[in-house]
Length: 542
Image (tube, rainbow, N blue to C red; front, side, top):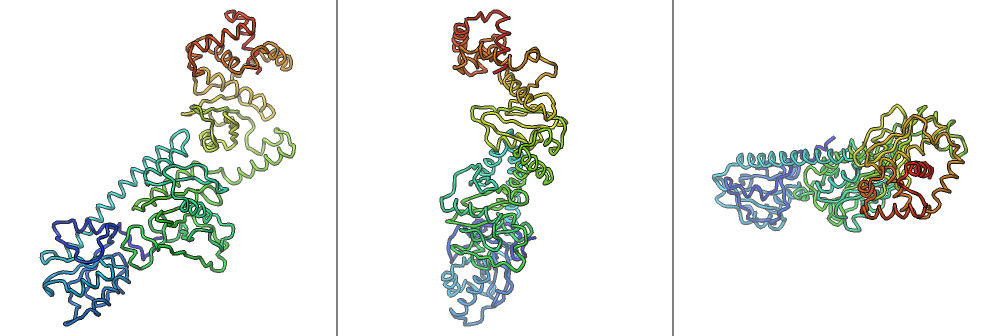
């Protein structure tokens, strides 16, 4: 719910109003600050306008309220009341009451730091108000266009194979700041954009703790506890409404150096933590957004400037990241936890598998494109795309348990090897199938390869005997992984030098040299199909 004290209109820079040649306004006193903004225009001839102002106004007056013979004391009191009410500027209309702006008024505005504009006789107050509303409409349109473009950009980033980092990168670009994703244990998982100063970075880390405080009656250390719950009042970027002061005339103003304290009411400790929080440290605007309910992931944002639409853009990113990092339903998570505990206590997989909700499963082995190994964020995104939370990012390969009733389709940015659908007691064999399918898929540059359902020739040989034969046959090259990998890839690609070179990212002459070395060490004719078959059989056992 929007606080009634916060003007709902977008701010308009005072310089933009002064630039309107049709108005002919002229600044004659007060600071020439490009950051001064106004939120509406209001005409009043009250000697004390304070009770009728909300803050941020351009107050228009023709001086009717000025008594004859008024001295500096009257103007000082008049201007001080406007400043106390949060007025952004004063516009004084010349004629028909006064032929010129009173000198004492100019001096009072200069002393109190209130911009004073001279309104020429040809310009009516209605024209000034209309110009303000026109500028507000233009600002609102620009804000909506910016938010729409940012939303489209963030949605496109969320559709990428590894979406978390692209979303953070697009958010940082759109806000011209820094965006980071914090894990439930408050560690920084990923970030994008120019990092904030160390003090602001530390304050932002503390700010994320406001969203999941261990003691709700105590705000997180280092923050101003400027936390805005989803149903509470919040301005741009979730900032609480500003005090009724001159700071309303500043873009993104906050109380400099002020530390707000929270005094909880009885029973407040039973309330849920806020969904967003904000602070300003060393001129850097900080904001944090809880992703989902409960102590989970947190989106943190730091920007050098706060502009209209920032809060909306960050909220869109938070919603997308909530979907990308979201956990399954609590009942499903509890079942997974129970299954893990039972496995750790020695229960066999067939006894634990019913807790996971499926009778038959696929084992999927996956490798991302590129040389870098997958990180936990990429593995989590893969699990979400496959519809399973049972993900194991083991080294360079991610392993996923997928229920057999969920189709496994090719995914951009990933190479997948899929086992046959098996019961839990056959998971180890299926894991081997998926590993072999992935190796074949990578060698043939295929996005997805499934293990065949029909029995293979290797199944006719007892595994113990097959392993012993493979070790003996490949012993001469077993100590050199480059040779075994090259031989495996070369055989899988039917002896193609060029395709093997592409699959291994080496020169074709390197492939020829390695295969020749293998032939010499193995003392075998690799052009003989029987030799190739026997070697392939042995390589599949390793």
